[in-house]
Image (cartoon, rainbow, N blue to C red; front, side, top):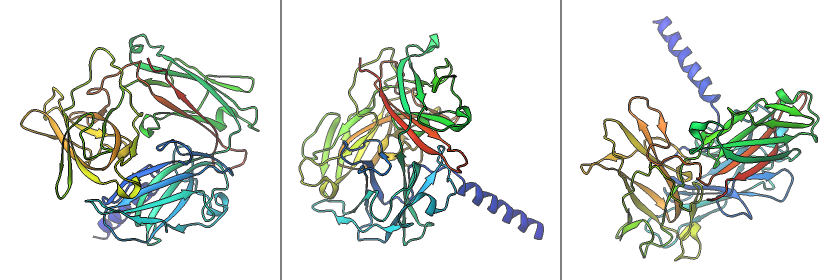
Length: 420
């Protein structure tokens, strides 16, 4: 009995340690928390949340609590390494202000079927401000208790000290030239005091700010003077994918593109037109927002509090059976999470469907097929894969200063493919 109890305690301790050391991400931990937006102020909404250290630049966090009323939400930020593991620093080492603060800025919804409380936060502020550059995870939690986590968001604080430039070309792999996009880039670290650039500098490349697409470059192809060159034929080769699908619920009074019917009674219901399988031989031009979404109510005055929620019904034809696998619907609106909330159901018409409670606005989304046998997501099975697809690429350069226990963000560049 004692041996079994010891094994149980050891197993629980191992799990706790593993959980505590898991990398941070953009996560929402409570089902009543909806419509999380985190973007740079003075840029268009949904802009990548990167700000310069000790500048006037700020980011805004906004989210809704559908449980109504007001709650005791607190927030803080924690410094992380390039892989979003905690840097294990004392708050005094990375904060020039207090350790945490209460979120006081909230407003109740007005004139909506779905009642909610909208919370908003601007960073940095007089109570919470970073001292050093790098990755920071923003934590929002209840009752000043970090065990009651509400949500987390990734914040990038930049101290620009390197030059970053790059180009996007077709893949060097002949078989992938019609589908893949290859990034070649250089980092000029002349402004840094680096002992071993092969060891102390690394570069993360992401497609459309999606963490699951990230490729970490730990070692350059070669060094030319103070330039690190990354152009090996086998690295930074991304599937082009396809343009995102989209729908528009800025108004619930009239049908817009891709909307079949709108019902308004005790709640709002939006029936989207059926989506086809887009894995076709040739690329078709479609303008999108690279996966982003925007909360907008064109019939109101303040979308933050008078935009309503609607049950949005999706359905897609796959030419596949339920026995083969299941499609999931993802986008920035749900942090690209493939989980029970994004899973679709099979119906008697041979199509897959789901409904999601979403706030009014403009939404990009895509379907991901998960095979029952492999359990692996296939991002191109229902969407296709084309070199011509317009994508954004974020390049983030990290350095570990001599003798330091943390990594700093010292370079950032945004590359875009050219629309055909």
